[in-house]
View 1 (cartoon, rainbow, N blue to C red):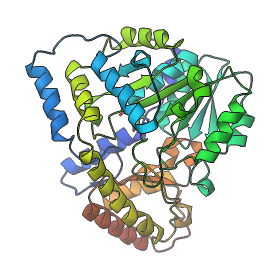
View 2 (cartoon, rainbow, N blue to C red):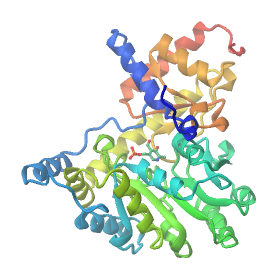
View 3 (spheres, rainbow, N blue to C red):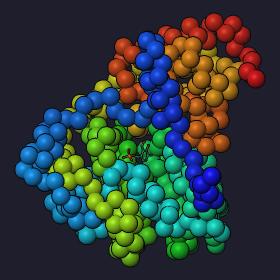
Length: 397
Ligand code: PLP
């Protein structure tokens, strides 16, 4: 029997991938499944980006690149951040990595160890808690409040900081809730953080361009955080590029060499052709992104009231991303049961709120990255499934 390192038992997973596997298996059996489980845009990567990737391969970009990414890509990232937020970021602080996830893995592994505490959003992206546990650190859940549009409460978060707190993770717009932290709340948090200069902040802004109203508030716009802010961003969601595996982190100058060494020790560099595609994405036309957001806005306008009209469902309006996170306690079923039975009996893939942390209990996540017709069909099937349960006041075993 192989003897695994003890920390392997601490590593969690991302249930959306398990739901995807089950949904795919059911589809193979001939079942008609509407997949609202996986968090990826249902659009193709825009053609000019695909062409740039293919051209890079045809031009012979088949070798290693510098570990931190090719300079024109890091310059494109810096220019993009300037365009979006008006900030000046040196390309020297940009580390290109294979997907958004890698920045969070590096940041958490850099700070996490037994005795350390890391504060993370809950309900939140499940990999935060998983990797915090893997690192040996203690995960401290930051509650996101449905009553605040799934934002955190700054005073509450500041009250959770202890001398053991090393890292504070923020994610707005958020997965799985679609929640957006208001500027006033972020201002209060940043002002309070002045009292805790040893705490590093990792701001996961991968949905930063996916906002339905107002402008995204990037933590990079707070100059007082420059020396202790790690920005996580990437191409996956904005440009429908989840499978290209391309993301980046902006690291404080002092932390950058550590992050780069982690990159050299793990993946060496990112696929060269994907990096060229990334340049085309950031420097090319923005219409494809705008069109995708128009489609998401139309779907949000349909799905939120439609979910609210289902018996036992209560759905807050998400401010960003492409997730709706209704509370389903009124159905009498728990989240996990709803996830399993909706998939098996109604052919609708969703993800239980419990997959995003204990505080997600009572909710389920719908990724509305599907056509309007598919969403209407899904809501119809859920309505029929609920009606078939007869009573709406039961809690399943
Ligand atoms: N951060 C959040 C909040 C996400 O929802 C996701 C993907 O679902 C990621 C990071 C990871 O993105 P990537 O697919 O680029 O690794």
